[in-house]
Length: 233
Image 1: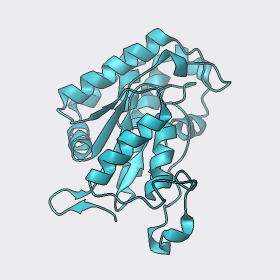
Image 2: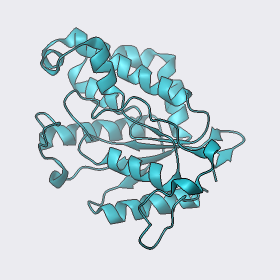
Image 3: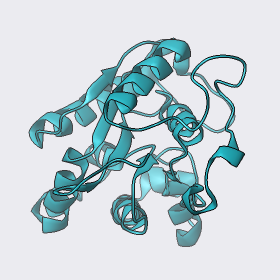
């Protein structure tokens, strides 16, 4: 079932939080378990289009400003292209990075598109994934990960959730089993029906044959890792 509300439109599921909190992993589980289209993070596609290098983004403030602005606008565009429920492995998260690395926040907060977008997020189901030191590790993709940076971004994401009065479900457990149980319970109560069994050996495998052709998840939006260049979730 694809839950909708006549006054709010289709439900949307967001995973928000700092990098290295497992947002993408949980988003993929929701995609596979509930058969929802997934909007993956768009930062790498923007980076490629700008033909920019990570080192430049760490030193060129104007370049960072353009990059973070485009990431935010692309997130909005990606959501608008999907007519129906979806799961996204972030929402406004890149603005938390912009608060530390860019000078665009004053302009963004004056932009009416931000208010409209936050109202859209507010009408969805938002899971706030909290950080754990155990998840912060170098893997050849994440560059310069530091626990202090993760905590700073986590705090900024929480500030924005509270500032815009966005209800959220905190996901604080390190255990993936407990994470998916929490997420599954919330979404089931919201009216989503899993497309795979909830118990047994097939519990975490997508059963594509059980999804009608018209309901099959669309191709994800441009993929990538981490709104902060060089970081992944």
